[in-house]
Length: 405
Ligand code: UTP
Image (cartoon, rainbow, N blue to C red):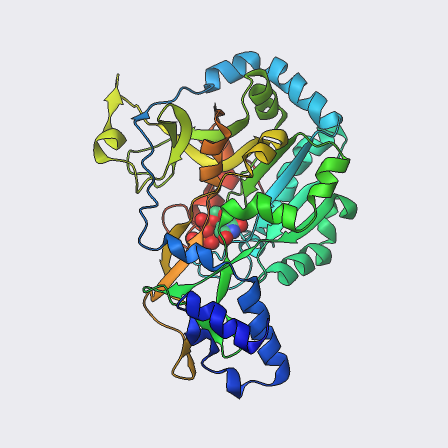
């Protein structure tokens, strides 16, 4: 794209401000800017003002495979899951592209030290959890790690300097998640510098399309992988590629599975798995109507299954849903940008980032097994520096699970 074409292209989209500093740039910077303009999806901006809280239909409760049923059928579930793992039909995807802004650390969240008397990063603790499975099956599943363009090199260097925590190097595959433009509240795309657009990671729902765009799906095809266990970086008790979970999802003939915990209170800030218009879906805590949130039957919450960001997706069904579009959610954020020739770092939210969410993929799958797990053993989120779902609470739970800190 040359300058004249870019100008016409941007005029059509009401984004001519992106060329404000063009004359001040050297040749290399000019071509970087034109390149950004050509490769950016401006259609995303059409989501502004749209009601993304889709009319989803009536919310009704969902049943789960309870802890009791799991205890009773564990040998059966486990045998099926272990067979699939031994046949190499399962891979894992770690979502590590987030910015961890609530934790207040400028490093990738997985590098955060949760040790007390020794160094123990979140990444290391999760890799130790994986050993429980690999030592019993004797096989290492492929582990795909999604980073953002911002934290990729630090993440890779961290794994390298820790010798990949004993995991075979050739079974770990890093990739970078796709980007979306950011803009002000009027939909004008920001410039990050005079020569670069302001782009941000497109939310954790971008994990599968970004994996395909990175070419890593070739590994999935080559190895005939049928299931992908997707999990977040910020739960230090995350159990990954759990054979019991895999076996239960397969035997219940579901296209995806979600590890859920019973909520401790109606106000706990977790998304809730329920049915929406008759299909399994996750309703975020801030979207759940008060009346439903507090509804009880025989003293128990009716909408009680909180998701832990640990999902099992069937690859065949993921591919079938690819043509469908994931909705973009608008997040109001403080976004550094160019203003009157100067780069400003606002103290208050000044515009939107556009994010797709993994929870929206569950709805597209059409069926989802709610698989209840013991929260003391499997749910220790690290979202905040202190208080609820914090480093402190996660440390307590790790100690309870016999982890030496
Ligand atoms: P969160 O929604 O908690 O976001 O991520 P975050 O960026 O880590 O933290 P805050 O909100 O800024 O404090 C849930 C999971 O999704 C991943 C995160 O790394 C985490 O594992 N994630 C989030 C991505 O991989 N990419 C994204 O664009 C956003």
